[in-house]
Amino acid sequence: VPGGAERNITIEFAPTQRGSVDATLNLDTNTAQNPEVSAVLSGTGVAPRVTISDQAVSLGEVGLNTTATKVVSIQNDGNAELRLNVPQNDSATPFSTNRSDENVTIAPSASEGLKISFNTSTRGVFQKQLTLTTNSGFTPSVNVGLSGIGSQGALLVEPQVAEVGELALG
Image 1 (cartoon, rainbow, N blue to C red):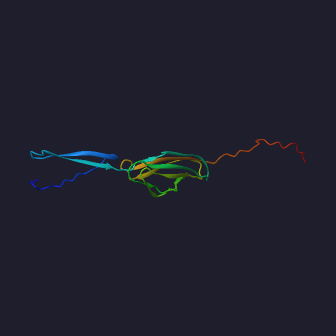
Image 2: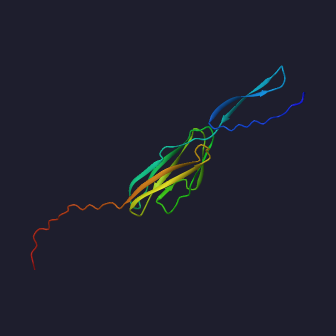
């Protein structure tokens, strides 16, 4: 750089972690009075951090055409707004959420509940993977395993033997 002139330089900050980061930029010069010039740099890495209260949700054994529900808590432990997408309910499975096909925004240090329901008209064991996509570069998606059993229930007859007494023929 010619004497008396100045030159701008671009410094890029691309944090790989949340929180404060400090650094020093040292530039060598060809002057005797200032052979090195330093500048203190600082920045803050911001990103959401998603935490799910339960990544394996069992809705248990449920009678046919009966609904069982559980609420999963989604927490943002990061220092930036968390945006996540809940997929649309799939009619081919007996699982559904109360936030079907929604984009949910959670502030830092806040949480939201996601209600998961299970209702089937068919006996058997059911499983599904619910994938929530996020805006977090650290956790771009979170999987929640869902399971439930559709059961018909049992019929209990009491007494199992009935006395009818004596009957006359004819």
